[in-house]
Image (tube, rainbow, N blue to C red):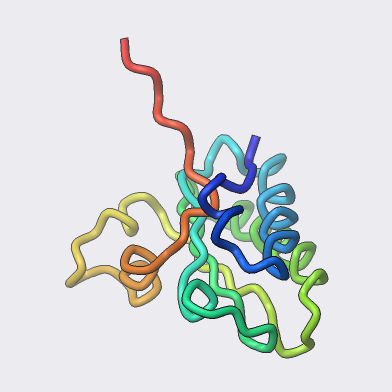
Length: 129
């Protein structure tokens, strides 16, 4: 099940908690098996502003058209909960290879999400034998 992490629930501004809950809940049924991690990053992590975009980074095993469509549906569904018309969810979808790339070749979104991102959800580690 894709649910908000305890750390994220404690750190998120009250106004963003239901939005992030809805985004993760909307992603889960379609993409749970493909998801690696979901992070909130950018100015919204430092200081919530209801009229600013809400940038999210989604790391998924597969980033094709079906995955992009599913993230867009989740974005649209959760975005309806934002109170300001100028606010919106901005979702960047990346592969694990792009997430793990060194800083010189990583995108600006990946570097920023690594530096200051708040982990909303992370795939549980596989049990070791």
